Each structure stands twice: as C-alpha cells, then as structure tokens.
Image 1: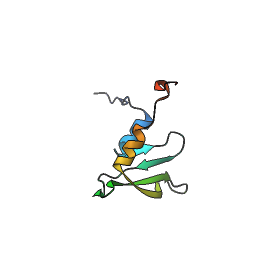
Image 2: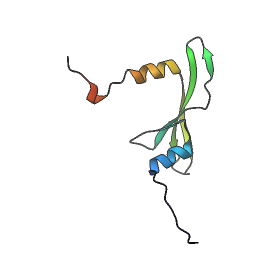
Image 3: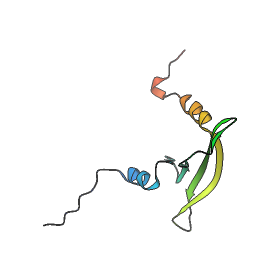
Length: 93
C-alpha cells in the first residue's frame, strides 16, 4: 500500500478556528481575537452575563495573551449585532 498524503480541503483560517474552539472570533486585520467562554456567568438582573476575553499572541512566545476582559449581557450583544445593516441591503431615503 502506498503512503499518500491527502490534504483536507479547508483553509488555514478554518483550521485555526477548529483548533481554538467555538468561542473563538478572529479579527480580520490584526492578530487579535475575542474568546467567549463555554458557559455564561448566569442570569442576573440585567440579563445573561457573559465574560469575553480580548486576546492576542505574545511577541516573545507563540502563545495566547489576554489583553482584557469585558462582562456584557447576551441581550446587548444580540441587540448590537442585529442593528448592523449589510451594505448591499441599505436603502436610501
């Protein structure tokens, strides 16, 4: 039997997303990303709290480094995302 190397038809970007997990959201123009936790902090008076880590790669070592954390609500995230309009769907008044 011949040893053949078969490459998977996925991009380098998709490979990195698979490695980092579902909570990983990369920046398209820098070496930073948002890392969401696997579980939220729970429901409180203001909604469902989620701790988001803003991450980058360390320049001295090739490992993740946390820049800061943000605690936001799921409801605020969804409200903000849903308020973004796509450029091709904008209508002129």
